[in-house]
Image (cartoon, rainbow, N blue to C red):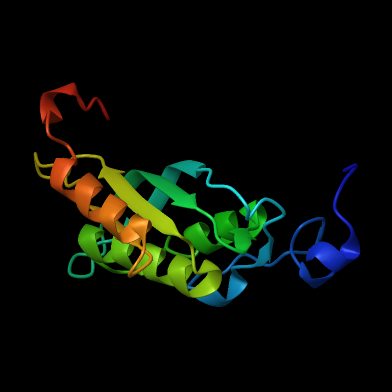
Length: 166
């Protein structure tokens, strides 16, 4: 295979290569775009690290900063990375608690991609002397991925002293 064809999802992309992209200044799930997964015959992880994620406290409007980790096993679609960047940027002026942000991101990606498995981990920098690191996951119901999600949840962060996120 020498590359993707327009028939394999490229013709539907509006953001990649567009020099006139408008940055959303409010939560914008509609900017997310996907392309066909050309390797849906196998399991593999796709991992995104966003070390410059920001959102706002819904009460004080103070900024919160995090590294957001998104890992998923694709099904028929994969997320286009520029659209993901613009989507995550749209949280910049969005007021929500840390736990809500990771769950909203996961829910929007499930809606877009219908992945086999997905997890989202927000490692927020301390504010007021406390850091909050919410983690959520999902496995396709009725499949081995649901079992995987349960196992990973039950074994997540078993040794927090080895988690170095600051």
